[in-house]
Length: 308
View 1: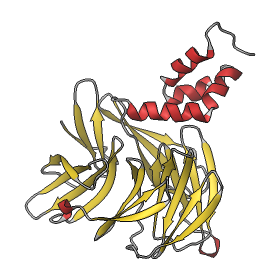
View 2 (view 1 turned 90 degrees about the horizontal axis):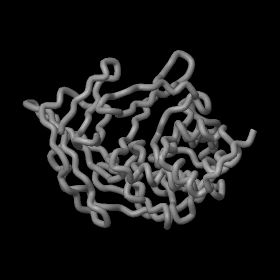
View 3 (view 1 turned 90 degrees about the vertical axis):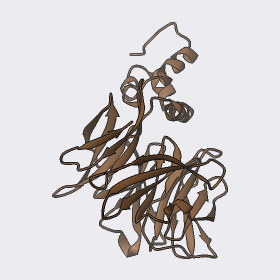
View 4 (view 1 turned 180 degrees about the vertical axis):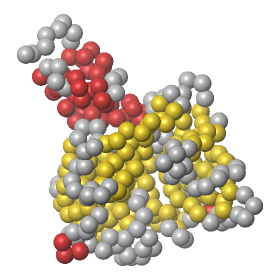
């Protein structure tokens, strides 16, 4: 039965844009007009932008769990200053592992391997339950990443080899291979999408992929990495960050730097001393009263450390 009301569609859309994704999925069944509004790609894009720009928005963490017969996923959320774990029962396509994320979409890969050295990939949106399956025809992937081109409204998967990289466009449903004049480390790391670009950190340099131009460029290695044993890239509230572990004999600590926009300079963000062990995740935590850091350690104990 069609739901009738006297509110104009513009007002309904404004109200729906303020709701969380879980509520939107439920309200799609209210009536045909609501389903049309919520299913519109433009509405989805605006809702995502509003969520990313919200001062109270906190990132979530997906963890792959290995079972006896298949892999499952758990979603960790920060709500009200507490860490909540929800089991995600749906496995979108077989024995998949999480590679990386961009704008709420996960890039998965079949951990059992593909036929003739190809890789079976899946793009999965856990909120909308939409799935996109495709293969990497080139094989021998060194590094990988997922990014979004706002100009063409296109998600792109980038896989890097030693001397070339390939781009899968969801809009064209096709791969494009680009020869590269330089080679990158064979480390199998996933890229981090932040500040509108895709980044990788290697032993001696960084790489940046621009989804609007499909160009890959090398960047100098951040100077802050000189005295640290372990380091990686991450994203904190949409910004590219550099995360380092100090693993000296006397103490263990964490240092986080935030990359300046439109430059390769880094600003010190936080230092955490006397960390008992390497965390599996680091969040920026925001509520009405404070901004802080949450470090999550062993999953079995769900232990955490808050630094304000």
